[in-house]
Length: 352
Image (cartoon, rainbow, N blue to C red; front, side, top):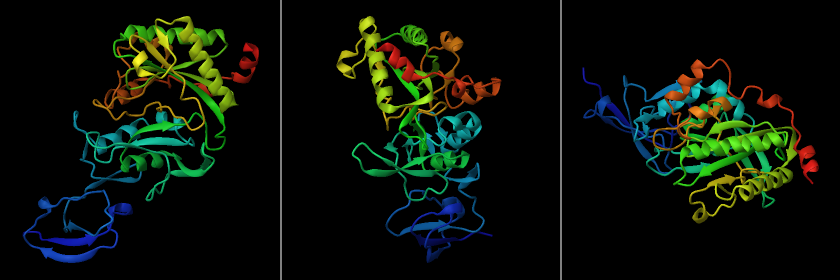
């Protein structure tokens, strides 16, 4: 018995992959389920869609959220699909979630994969049902509604909307004006060999230790490394920004052949840029365990300092190797980061 298909108009796809405002157009006895194709990008104009009894569903579920078009390739150089992305975040969720939960978070969405247009999203968009939202004041003084992950469903729902990368603030929704992180991004010029980046991270750690500040290490999933300083108690953003800028400038002045603290790319040749600009209200840094929207599907990976010498690059870990690494570890490399008590206000007063 040959299956026939139904062609309908519709105005979008809602929860549980159900059509919005469907209307019968015609029966298609010339089409079988194998001929059908659809899209999860809703159009503002009426569209046609094939629906047939007995067809295989184009949606899967992860953390209770339907993933439409799970076979869509989003990393074309590697063949990784939308389902691979959802499976990755589900597999590392217990490690990933604490770094983004209840923090205003900018995301990078690539609805049609990394080969096509990707864009930042930080404000609430229509259709999100499981993601938190909060009105926050922007630099202009106006208020805007920011998104933030609440739980695992929030993360997977954002993946369903095409999100690959997560970039949280260094503060929480409850206290957006108080930072609990300082992030130094060591960004090497194209001609800087990796051993110099490793040496730079060790030097940063040493100098921070001399100030009485414990620091933590993370690969960026790109060329460089992050040196992250937890703050407990939290500190007002203006002081955090002043400290980060002064520290970066001091490092660059003391080691002018190795470091630079200005953003001008033309001057970075042969040097490592100490990027301190992530340390102001509204600025973001890539989350630990976040994928990067780059060839190879690399991952920003937190590390123990003892692992630094084993690294070969800032993108050593990817969508396949990162979950395997976490399965082998008995504890989070950053375990205890939220229990470290160090007061930037007291240190700033001592440095005056």
